[in-house]
Image (cartoon, rainbow, N blue to C red; front, side, top):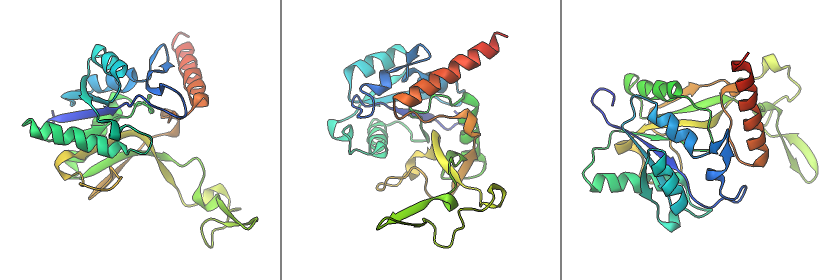
Amino acid sequence: MINGIEVVACVPARGGSKSIPRKNLHPLGGQPLLAWPIETALATPEIDRVIVSTDDAEIARIGRSLGAEIHERPAELADDKALVIDAVRHLLTMLKTEGHPLGIGLLLEATSPFRTPEMVSRCIHRLVEEDLDSIATFSPSSINPERTWRIEGEKPRPFIEGAVPWKPRQQLTPAFQLNGAVYAFWAERLPANGPSFLFGRMGAEILSAENVIDIDDEKDFVTANAILESSQRSDTR
């Protein structure tokens, strides 16, 4: 809790995945990917409940064994076209129906395993102390939009009209991207429609790109495991 307000973390983990079959159970650092957000949430002092939203019996079993509660997600909210935010809305509706107070909601996706309890706590405190409606974590963009192009009829042109892609890096306008590590919001204020977890009075928690990774395919797993192995070697020196 924070200031007497309950904090609930939702970990969405559907059974299907096109990029990597059973991605949420794929091993990372010797444990399933699902374990990473659950362990971080349980180690974050402000979080009262950790709930895995899933349509999959094996994921549910493993989630329980790791200390999380389970919310059974309807099949229509777990296919390739379903939005994560709709699964979160379904969970919040269930909690409200059961009489649970809706305080602060968190989205902690398994695909961003390297978040820390400190990152999560900072977002929760900023949400409350800065009177925000929502806050998310960002990192410097891997490519600046001023250096991107569109190809029309096999002819290139700057993606941003008037941009100069050859500018020195120091003269480019700083650009950031969502990294998926943490989304925090007031649950009662989450819009009833729309795809975005950022709404109302928004905040941005900036993280170094070295501190986050967004796992989408097998190559990302290889990279993440290499980072872990390198970190473990450094810790033993």
